[in-house]
Amino acid sequence: MIDFHTHILPHLDDGAKDTAMAKAMLEAECKQGVTDVLFTPHYYGRKHSPARFLEKRNEAWAHLKPNVPEGLTVHLGAEVHFTGVNVPDYDELCKLSIADTKYILIEFPFTNKWTHDLLEQLGDFVYETGYTPIIAHVERYREVLSRPAYLTELIDMGCLLQVNASAFEMKREKRLALALLKRGWIHCIGTDAHDMGVRKPNFSVAKAAMQEAGFGESWDKIQATMQAILRGEEVKPQMDKPIKKFLGKYI
Ligand SMILES: [Fe+2]
Image (cartoon, rainbow, N blue to C red; front, side, top):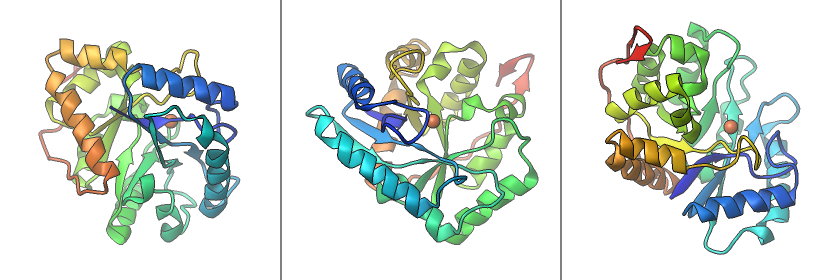
């Protein structure tokens, strides 16, 4: 089982604050049957170039490595904040890919409105580099919740979609997640764990909710898709009818 989105590497972002917390988070992952964890520290590009960020990430990883429980495999990546403005050189940006594959975890703005330029800029990145963006926790954006048609545009561009396990604990987000599952549009799932408190690694709710809703097979399919991504294999999203918001539901 793979946790595709975590903030476990200490001292890089607002995730684990020290080695002890990181160790506790990794142990919690193991207890839930997780075999592979992807470290995705935030990259905002405000303070550091991608190259400097990677130096810092590698230092943090070297420090934490001896504390990884046996049987758990760690993969390195980043959660790259993408606003479409001041975008680093594409070659530099590609260095932030997931486990040296041609997939990159992209976080879109939460507060700013998504503009045509933003999507166009991401499309340009895809066209120029051939890299595949995986859009982080799509259920968390206000823009997506109010206008789910954005997801069709992203799928059309070739993007893959990641959902947080916690989506299944929230009413509106769960409705969107189920609509995504119907279309096979959850390609990756992660805990987005930041600590051992309210944002602890917690897969169990998501897995149980998916099984209860009749999507038990989707869980296995998503896990297989994430494995393929980590192996660097090609994964293409399948187009389907757009998700519509209707009377507070997603259909
Ligand atoms: Fe995150």
